[in-house]
Picture 1 (cartoon, helix red, strand yellow):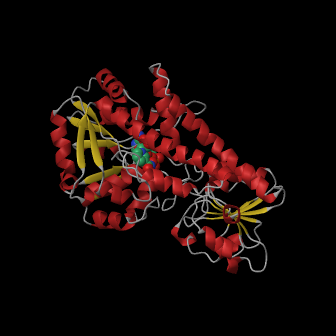
Picture 2 (picture 1 turned 30 degrees about the vertical axis):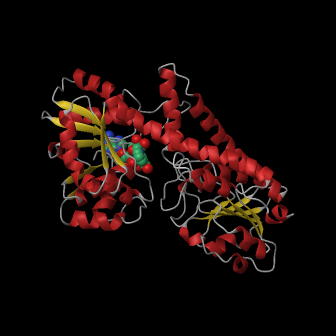
Picture 3 (picture 1 turned 45 degrees about the horizontal axis):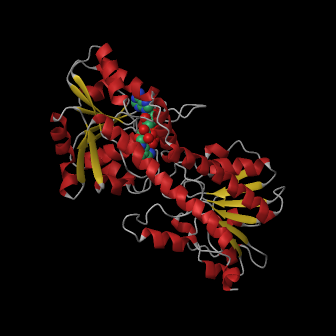
Length: 434
Ligand SMILES: NC(=O)c1ccc[n+]([C@@H]2O[C@H](COP(=O)([O-])OP(=O)(O)OC[C@H]3O[C@@H](n4cnc5c(N)ncnc54)[C@H](O)[C@@H]3O)[C@@H](O)[C@H]2O)c1
């Protein structure tokens, strides 16, 4: 696994757990050092135990020695990042091409490169060109996009809905099928297509899921104006098998390491081929506007932001991960601080380097300390430990205001506890009973 991040580490560890010998390679020495000590550099439920188990029996090897790892491996998975380029919607493929060149220069033997990184249509063809220039005829490239979700990554690896393999040479389907056979035996669909097809399936899937989220988020805006509960709409719509209920939960803007960059990446691929992907463009725009909607709402709830104390519960883009990439909190917290608010935050994965330089922003070690004295509590990420908070204990005798961006709490309960409670796309109970 070339790149031991969220994807490379999880899939490498899980491949080792299936009985393979896996070399997890990373240029980040700190990561490798920490992994050798049995400390995972990322927060992913169940991963630490699996790393320890496979490392101790020698099936999982952590290294920064590319030549060694490549020489020992038949299959080389590229799992490096493919972020968005600065000031552009295009995908930065520099890590991928650098990795390809490093692999090519380190071996004379026959190898198979498998791109697990999310790469735009035609990247496999571009890699072929690089290899041709380097006269590496014995290295082939196939595509195997990854669909795991952070926070549920081990389960997703073990029980994937489908395994997608893209290759222009049929002989490789058999080789990769053998690797994945234990998962196929448990019911995973093994789907083969052209290399370009596999590359596009990944972007199409992420753009579609982002569209579903954005669709229900916009309907939530309408529900707020019409006194309807958006959760009824999600249920009513989602019960139709053609639609399906997943990814129809209204909330903050979508974030994370994939949807924002992959929707942009797909649009830029469309532009390259002069195809107007207008739906995906609207999704990106709507999602960007959504962040502003939330800060406007906070201003309305608090009157003014100056010197107001705001407490964030959770700041990661979703629960069960420490990943902060493109989290809504990254836009909201700096803005609120800039407008004079005093922001505290608590997240189960600890303090975040992203907020360290903000003058009016402080990490608190627990929920109680975080919320005490707050003018507004914002539930940003739905970690399990927030589900049973007794807000009355946190702030006795005074008026409590909560903005729940995940619809985590029960409307009736909040009403009974006389908490000034705002959520997403749900009616004010008193209004709906009129
Ligand atoms: N994170 C997810 O949930 C997820 C899910 C599916 C697909 N993907 C895709 O998988 C890819 C990787 O994502 P990630 O979240 O794991 O990224 P990441 O940033 O967590 O990890 C990438 C790792 O690659 C290492 N690296 C970069 N260049 C290297 C090189 N030349 N040699 C050795 N190591 C190198 C970096 O040090 C880093 O540790 C991306 O294309 C992403 O879109 C991610």
